[in-house]
Length: 312
Ligand SMILES: *Cc1c(COP(=O)(O)O)cnc(C)c1O
Image 1: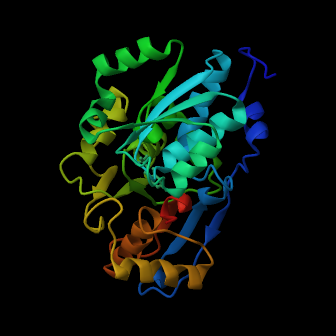
Image 2: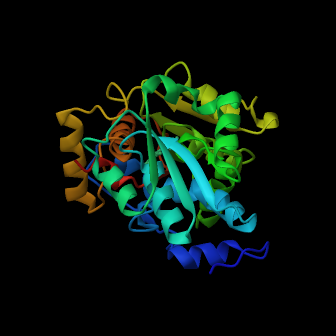
């Protein structure tokens, strides 16, 4: 039996799930042109846990804590067939004895992905919906219907990007052992970048997002909408999103990117995948080569984990 009181603290959760927090900061020196003028460090959030990797743990921890504290025994969330978010949340719910309903975009019942097979193993209630009905995932009416249907339930948005996610990302920033001139991270649903911006807004540190989706017109807006209102008007010098490295969209990627990921692993012994971290480090190599960062800059790249999503 788990306790169900307001006294449940984050420590309990960290222990229960065996999270390796804080994650290490590691200087890397791959043979990239221009890197000799910079300091490049990687925040290894990919090492937080073997299954619940990276930014998904950061984003989910305070929602999970709230569920335990409020004695909510059922969580509902949304994602695609390879979603790192559903994977992380599915595992956490299983380990914490919380019922989990995953609303999945598209019908994979005949051919579940490795991610979905894991969810089945963890007794997730998987509900496949059409792309059209998936589009309702943020609509208040639809969410109210889900609330009515499931009763006492916590609904977490796609990607885990809610207000509590920003608090978890702030913790990652608190862990940092030194100050940096730049922090660079991949962007999909925007919660990670919003969390970094919020935590660093009153420092000289610049936050640079690498868009992994074809989202020129809306990614910045997603991030803005997650920020507290007084930070929505931050000058653009504080943060920006670069859209040159999405490789045509989310899971699409080129041979060049795959080769880059292999080469990066050879040089650093750090595994990356072509959906998020591969694009991040590819962009970094390119930007460093172009002289984007002033000489002597201290750059921190956030390894957000996500290796499970690249399984086929
Ligand atoms: C979800 C995810 C991201 C994107 O983070 P957002 O907060 O959704 O922008 C980046 N990297 C990995 C590995 C992810 O799983």
